[in-house]
Structure formats: C-alpha cells, structure tokens
Length: 196
Image 1 (cartoon, helix red, strand yellow):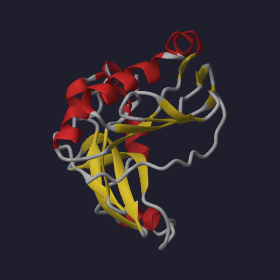
Image 2 (cartoon, rainbow, N blue to C red):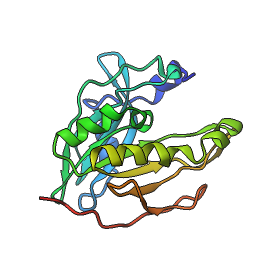
Image 3 (tube, rainbow, N blue to C red):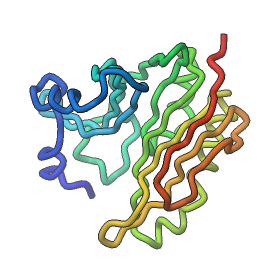
Image 4 (tube, rainbow, N blue to C red):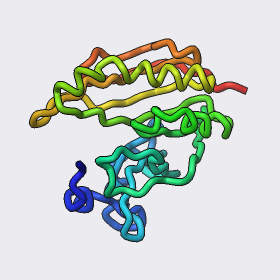
C-alpha cells in the first residue's frame, strides 16, 4: 500500500513555485526527458509523467490503470501525444502496459513510440516471479499496435524490496533491440525511425 501522507509530502503541484524550481535544474539545451513524479492537483493525487524540453514542461500524462495499492491516487483520463525531433510518442506508466487499450490509444493518435517509465520495486519473492514477465507483456503491446516501446525501470534494492528492471527498447515485432543488464543502471542509445 502506498502511504498517502508520504505521497502528499513529495507531490508536486505543476502550478507551484516548487515545481518551477525543479524545472530549473534541467538543462536549457539537451534531450527531451520523460520523468515520473507524484502530482497533486486540486487536492487529488496522480501518478504522473512529465515531458521536459529545454527546462520547460511541455506536457503531462497521468497513469490510467492503477494497482489496488494505489488507492490514494486518481486515474488519468487523457492520452496525449508528444513529439521529439519529429518522433511522435505517447506514455504508458508501468501497470498501464498490462492493458492493450492503453498502448492502442497511443497508436491511434499517430505515435511511433510508447515510453514506459516503471517502478517494479517488489518484495524479493514477487520480483523473482515477475523477473522475466515485464518484457513479455510489453512485447505483446508492440505486436498488437506496431509501436516501438522504450521502458525505463528502477533498479536496485531498498529495505526488503528489489527491482531488476528491465530497461529496454523493443521494436514493433516485440523483439528486444537493446536492454541493460538486469539489476544494473545505465544508459541505452538506439535509433528509432521517425516514420511518415
């Protein structure tokens, strides 16, 4: 269960000066960044991702499919599409990828790529059970939609929990093009065609 008090303590309101201070930490020139965060808006909590370009938040996605332990959060309603150097992409956060409709909404809006920020930090026995399942589920979404998929997962250990990732790039056939070794942080670089 996610502790609502803790979530509210770290939550950011995108209209606040605190949020603007966070954005100032990003480079004015550099890559497009997708970053997950806990958002608070009109008193409601959301599991959100923001798209940042040049130290500016150009848009947000709120997770639509919530786990039972996310009962403190409200579900998002919209599937925005973004563009980075002509590459159209949408976002599915973690558990969203278990639902074909989530990736299909991204594809229906003309995107080529779905970006999946994830936090699969689980109790060790459960993490072991799901160790190889994440890419299998993501593979299905690629094959169903014809989208590329980029997942960025946490890795490491905390208390009695562990996350092995995976952080990976899958092509529209669901094949893993690149992947970081499980349990290791790092950076993936690959070319994704922009499309028509």
